[in-house]
Every structure is written in C-alpha cells, then in structure tokens.
Image (tube, rainbow, N blue to C red; front, side, top):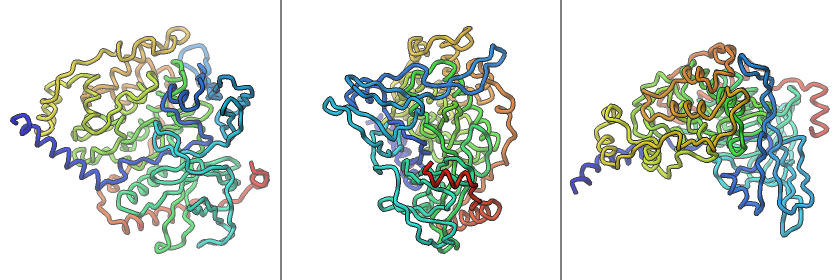
Length: 531
C-alpha cells in the first residue's frame, strides 16, 4: 500500500500528459513522404520470407556510387542504390528489372507453383513495420478536365475513388503512390521542369487546431530551409481563389527513390552506413543552425535517391529551439525513437535529434528496432533494460513524482555495447581499416546516452572518425537559413486564424513564384507520351 501511494502521483502525471497529448491530437501521427516506386515494406527479413512463402536474398552491397570520396584517401566511390534483387524458390521466370531498382510496378510472384504477373498495390507508409495496407490498385488514374474554382486553363481534376485532386496542368501523368494520416502523395511529371516530382495534398488541414498548425509549420519550414540533405520545396499552390473557398493545400517536392525503412533491410557495408549517417548529421546541423529541432526523426522520414543522396523531410512537428523546453509536449517523436528526456517530461534541446539518429543508426546495424516499446512507460523500461538505470545526478533533475516512479522501478545494469552491437552484426572493416566496427560502436555509445547533458552534439558527431572521413565544409557549414520564428510555436490560434495564416502564406508564395510555369516543348512531348 505504501508503494502504491508513492507511485500514485507519477501515474497521475502520466495520465495528465496523455490528456495533453489528446489535445495535441495528430502530433503523434506522422505523414511520411512516400517514395517514387514502392519497395515492399518488410518488417524484417523473416517477415518478408513469411509474407511470400519464399526465401528472399537481400544482396550484399545494394548501393551503387555517388561521386563522393573518402577524405585524405585514395578516391573511393560509394555505391548508389542498385536493385533490391529478390530471388524466389522454384520460380521459373524471375523477370526482375535489374536496370531500374525501384520499378516494382510489375512483380512476378509464385502462386501455387505457377508464376503470375501482379500489379503492385499502392501502400500506406504510416509505419515502417506495418503490413501492406492497400489503398489503391492500378497505376493510371481517370482524368476529368472540367473547370475548377480557378481558371480552367490552369487546373484540372483527377478523381481517385472518393478523393478529388485539383492540380496545375503543368503536372501530368498523376499517379497515387501512397497515403498517410496527413495527406495523399502522388507522383507526377512536371512539364516545366522536365522531371518527375511528388505532389502532396494535405488532407483536411483545417479539421482541428493541431492539423492546421502542422500544415502551417510544414509549409513555412520547407520554404525556409535550403540544404542538399533536406527535402526541397519545388512549388506550392491552392486551386481556390478566396479565403472562404480555401480548403486544399498542395506541396510539390523532390521525388525520391526510397525511404530508409527499405535501406535498413539491406546488408550495408561501413562506407554506406557511414555516408548515410554523415548526411543525416549534415541535414540536422542545418536545421539546428536555424533554431529548428526536428522532433520526429525516424526511418520513414528519411529518404534516399539512387545516387545515395539522403534527405530529411516532414517538418510538421518541428519546433523552435528557443521555445521553453519545459513547455514542449512530450508526445512528439514516434515512440521507438523518443529520447529519455522526452519520455520523462524533462524538456529537451537540439540533441534530442541525436538520440533519434542513434536509434536509427543502431537499427541499421541490427536490422531491427532498438527499443520497441509498446507504450510510453514500456518505452522507458526498454531503454533502461539495455542502457541501465541513470545515475543520481540525472534523477535529481526529474520532477518529484516522476523521480519517485523511476526510483521505485527495478535497478538495471547496462549491457555493454560490445554485447549489444557485437562484431558479427557489422560488415567487414573497410579497405585500409578506416571504418571499423569499433568506430561505429564508439559513436553509437556516444549517441545513445540517457542523460542528454552527456550525449554527443551534432558538431562533435561530425568530427567522429566514423563520419569525419566524408567531411566537406560546404556540406557541414552550408549557409544557414533564416532563423525560425518561434512565434509559430507560441501562437494559440483557433482553426480559422490558422487558416488565414496559411492562406496568406500560399498567396504570398504564388505572388513571388511562377507556380503555373510554361511547359517546355520537350516536357509537353514527354507528358503526351506518358513519360
């Protein structure tokens, strides 16, 4: 009874934080950018084998090479993403397109011993570990050229089941490639830029304060930052003319080839892991230079291209580092990648993103989630079971009720990083021994630190031997963006006010950018041919 009374305040605290999270609503949700050609989202290698009833060979070295060299070494090219080649038992006709890795529009599967052709279904990518959630079958979509609320010579509509897209005519060959909690993502051919792009329609951005605030943040921040390792904003528009009509927001982005969920399942060597990690750190450093904490880093929010270029995306949860840390909600980062200080409601600073990167890095090594907590409290338990119960200095900084709870939990001794990340989990050392399991393990041990005061910073991480081999001053110290205006975080607006703010931003964007554009002859011809 005495122990129950001691723990009761902490339980009440967690109930209160859950009620606060309910007000935040979709802050726990995420809307991943969906990649160009879907690679089947396996939970793990066994899951893939069980799903298809066939053995899948994840080929070593599925990355092929960007023009990037190790510093102070013989020029070495890092492989870029090659086809994720699958092999099927007793499959007579493999028909895998080895020229274009991520073109899974046609896949030959084995059914009752016979090969049959099956069109790839578009999947929901709200979670790396989700099973296939089919949202649309088929590739090309019916097009309705009827006029819209804007000039009919600028826009046309595309009907997809019960969803209607109203897009600029510069975008042709619209194809749904995925959906998430916050919107629908399509691929399209841009006849002005002569390239494929991704168009994201935010679904019901004004249904509540949280969705509206996230839409505002995402658009503002994408328009603010400019770095090769952060997803770029190519265009933005709305088909509505007035604030009263305004209900749809479209964001046009670079079209990537895959997200990190798929890359994690590949057997990566040190050069590939190191280079991908280096780019994550460069992108996050750029955000931090603008006073932005991402707060929602996870594999599905990190995308890659076939030349091994990595980009960070989804800024709906990003916030100013200048905001009072104790006023920040603990329900931000997706649970598996949530830092201890977030879980315990301590407030947080920039290196909350370093914890998330450490979790992603560890997942790349082990090919599975490091801390798969089932709820808020279980997440903390999973962490301390591995890293050990924190010391008294850390506990002294907790709120009394939280400290009482933590102190009354079993005491755990840390598992050594040599056991957690044993040598057999790593690839062979790189040529010349410049990148080794020991290097990687040391960096992991500095990122995955419970006490944020002792955790490595992004600048320190970029100097670590495991990633410093790629150091390029133009990438690490790129010109900083404008400082993030933390009034976004402080504003306590109703939905109508958020709607006004977003409409003002999009109107200003359309006024200062040529959103309609003039299709080139080449682009128009390629679109007409269905490219």
